[in-house]
Length: 495
Image 1 (cartoon, rainbow, N blue to C red):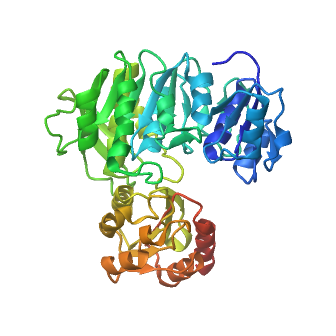
Image 2 (tube, rainbow, N blue to C red; image 1 turned 180 degrees about the horizontal axis):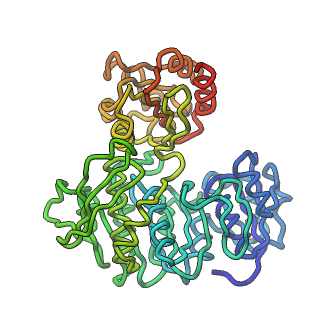
């Protein structure tokens, strides 16, 4: 980490990752400013509370030659006036992932969580396990882990973070980072995780899965898979990669390319080809009262005891086994410590996040948007809330979800739901021939599914037909038109 105080400016500071980076830089003792088009809650107030100068709008005069570094956000275009001014003045610039590497990962020991699915939850589990082991890890996670309160100390300071608890400096020990495969910045169209691996001689990584995503950046499955192959190549010989043995692509790449030590993990009954997982979990029936998900853990063929998770679903057990493998083999954390930590793991906001039970109807928020994640999330919620009907309310919003790439997969992803309501596409810039056809999707699913014209129409339909004991799953990787507050308020007023 840089020990010299710097003047740093972030272009596009209000995004979750950029905002958390700004706060880390401020906590490291740097003078930090940031610009964006708006500073809405929760990030805007959090930045101001952190002592970061918030500059509304993008203006050339926001940049002067006295800055030591300008961090350019992923959403910023090369013709942005501040980006142009940075180049004119010759001020050093970098991406979010480049700044994180240079100023927080170098000299630390990264634990980088990569893969199409489960990164945020697995990262949060790793950070929590390492924290409970007394290692005081730093972390940078693309979500808000519930176990790390927003008012916790960050670095040497104590302040309210206004709800932003996804990043922490920690001590000179492990640093957990969610390794996003989306591109870093306009001049570096490579995955962010390229900046996170290969930092030291003994990096640790987790590879959860590989399933074609981010079609706007990676036009084919082969191009997408190649990014993970290159990541594996960058891991040092003295490092470790924990990989899900069930995922055929991950299994093949790790088996054929890894120079580092490998720890495969999985669940009992997985098809793992010619690989025998070192770590695997065997699911036990969920607790009918608490909804907790127990599982038995085995390592190297030996029984390690019964574990339990508050967060439901087989996919979360898989995340937990991967986190245990990485923390145990990479950092020497005892299995007993991991068991105690996971029993207290509260999950991550927007991942099977219970918002309330207005009128006896459970309303959950979840980030799921890929068909695999939708299927796993709905099945997990069905196991946690077995009574009443399960409503799946889905907004296709990401560049991939709005395209027809997974049209067929979506038709089966909602099988666990009793009712399915589709919102209109969250993007209007997708060519018509490439768009996901939600009307066709509703017809294929059958009478239980309906394509709705607006968010307000969805709220009205649920309010009219949902009954006490039902469960509502709101699935979107965006704000979903404010449906969360609207639905909670309307259901509460009905009761």
